[in-house]
Image (cartoon, rainbow, N blue to C red; front, side, top):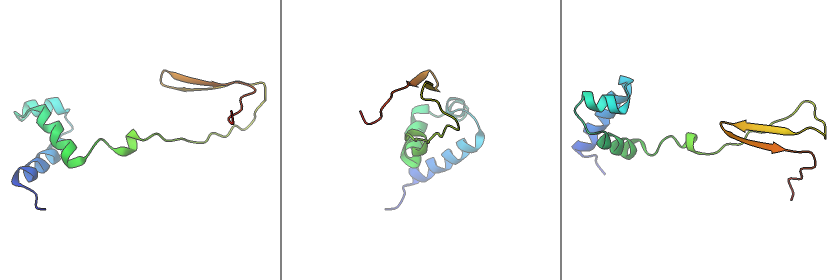
Amino acid sequence: MEKTELHKEWERRIGIFEASGQTQAKWCAANDLNIHQLKYWLKKIKGPKSTNETKSKFTPVLLAETSTNDTLEIKVGQASVEVRPGFDPRR
């Protein structure tokens, strides 16, 4: 399927936008374009935001020294998880 002229034009515009280093809002204002059009074409041409950013990833953590009486606390942003003595991942 061939790309339409409009599709090619938006590919060109998106290239210019990405090279500009500006925010979407500032670039659209400077180029007299509607930000919603830019967002639509970004999604259409580039797809959803990078799938690497949206997928959860787990990283194993190995503790050099552990004690069965210690509590492990994991914080990510405002969320935290505590793993207390006696935790059994099989339950």
